[in-house]
Image 1 (cartoon, rainbow, N blue to C red):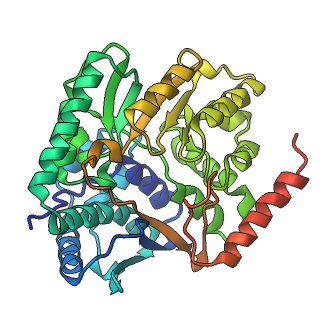
Image 2 (cartoon, rainbow, N blue to C red):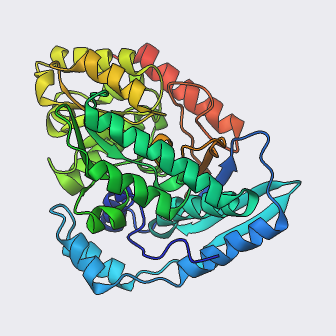
Amino acid sequence: MEQIIKSLLENDLYKFSMGQAIYHQFSDYKTTWTFRCRNKDVRFNEETVEEIKRQVRLYCDLRFKEDELEYLNGIKWIKGSYVDFLRLWQPRYEDFSFELKDGELLIETFGTWLNTSLYEVPTLAIVNEVYFRMNYDYDQLFEDFKKRADEKCAKVDSGEYKLGSYSEFGLRRRLSAEAQEYIIAGLAKTNPRESRFVGTSNVYLARKYNLTPVGTMAHEWIMCVGQGDHKHNPAYSNYYALNAWVKEYGVLNGTALTDTITTAAFLRDFRLTFATLFSGVRHDSGDPIVWGDVMLAHYESLGIDPKEKTLLFSDSLNFEKANKIYEHFKGRCKVAFGIGTYLSNDTSVEALNIVMKVTKCNGQDVAKISDVEGKGMCKNQEYVDFLKRSIEWRMNNEVVK
């Protein structure tokens, strides 16, 4: 099989925005990441796992090229000190472990947060593409994908869907590199009145197609900053994480993720200063309409005009869902979408629901308590219970000023 990840720019932008802040503020943090396939009926075999390992080795041989570093340096919030770090950086195969147990693929990475954070998305992209190429008739799948992609582009171009500003977020679960590039190239040619394709999270393809690379922070940021320092009360994870983000970026690159330890807990810390400095917020679990209405009401309660803020939706979207959300919030605020698997891996075969989550930071468990059950991943239920109790105590006893 040809090499899948061919450039270290083939990563989501938020890995670089978080990476820079990690480099400047948390370079000594150590993390463990754990892979999971959530599809109950999917089994991996030895041949597939060996190819995954080979692809990871090839990925670990890559280095940033000078023209790639020059591109990153041109992004206004990326600093020269971080670019110099990336000039020296390389992935380490020794940070990975692989095991096949009764058809279940077990992957973990261990090492500095600086390193392991950057491994997540390329690893998922490798697993996904190897699995579909080795277990299905890939050529047939790709033809199916292209047909559906062409239909999507035609419907957007005709104005059937109204999506406001939207981006492609599908690198981690794409059918293949050529599939992701195919849909991005197609969407870049569309020009409807109420739908604007602004970019992709894939930095490599954003550069290639002169699109905007899109992304700010992920759950790992709030989990590790908020829970990685064992002196912190984890119920205040959002405060610590947002404060560190503002220290790094000020008013730049400001879309806050709300659901790491529930949106209700997030709103306790997203008060006037943070709500003013951050340009918007991102939805990633729970009912998007309910969430959006809550966020707009929160802005209004702080005396902030919601029309000046952006609601970014990114949870399991397709064009139909995005259209519905856009119509509901149009004129009330700025609306944007990050659409993933629906764009990058839509075929007649069910897509893999694969994730790779940080499970330990500085030797201690970390956890996500999402707005819906089933999106978290922690090895220690006792820690999850402790985190839930901490959040509950704060919500029930804290005096809100």
